[in-house]
Length: 373
View 1 (cartoon, rainbow, N blue to C red):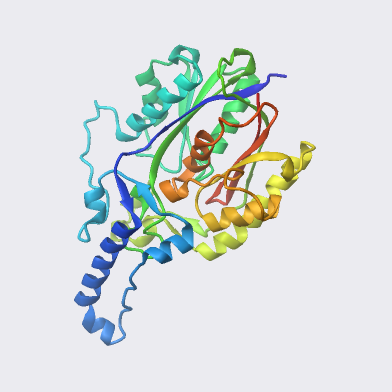
View 2 (view 1 turned 120 degrees about the vertical axis):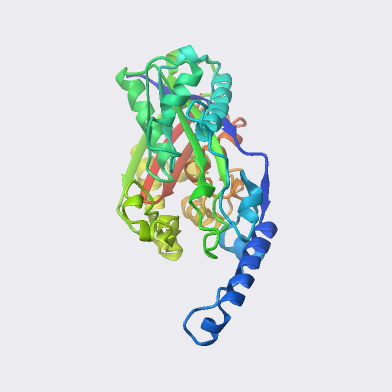
């Protein structure tokens, strides 16, 4: 049997930062203007007044303190509150491919690989800039990689689903080394005028090199012990934007054409689902949760991660054991657990186990058990 390893990772994010204070000031300015414009209807009971947001509310609900973003000025303008990014000519590298390419080059360097060593590229992310041609093929072309490339997605579990696909490809011999790239442009899906979700997402881009252990030349590689994926349909996290949006022009800008969720239901239903999957899958590998030195969990909500970690290994765990990066990045979709891994894996010892786990809309949960080599 072919031993498969993760041999290198890369990370890129925009330079600009939006703090919670800036986000709240922008949102509250919009609320003030809205309530003033609709004062008569609100007074008559025909409309509900909008509630202001607050920094304390955001941090208590999520643990998020800031996020990286492009086009900060337009996002924070109460009269705009969405990305205003100049459209590029088709002959130019698209924005998502450009960002993914930066992360990919870093991952290749960390894996001691050259583009000619790779023969498959998978772009696995929450949502894409366009449907076709595939973003993965554009990145493949920019790097000069032979072989094949394609896009795939399973919401916030896209990266782990992509990693299992890459592992399977190496085991089957259809690829000797695979680049899995997760270029997340999550702020494009936000309704910045929705109090319950205007603070959630940020932007980051990751890349991972997956290859046979026989060809690995990396100083920090991890053997993929096992992978497991599970899905369970739910409407509690949804975005109805898509191919048919132009077929119904009257509703193409409705609130359901952006990210929306029933957060309390998601929290209540996904948390035990993740705990069960990790516990049962570790047991199949003759491991207990306490045997795991590092948990790289999906970065959506610090309260959810705390409960999951406490159920697995007890309340006395350290932040090093289950590192959190969402305070800096916000929810960066499928890239979250990979950023946690990228930032917090160098100090593990040979033989240490780690769990890389994502969870999100679908519902979908992806889990990789890794062993430091």
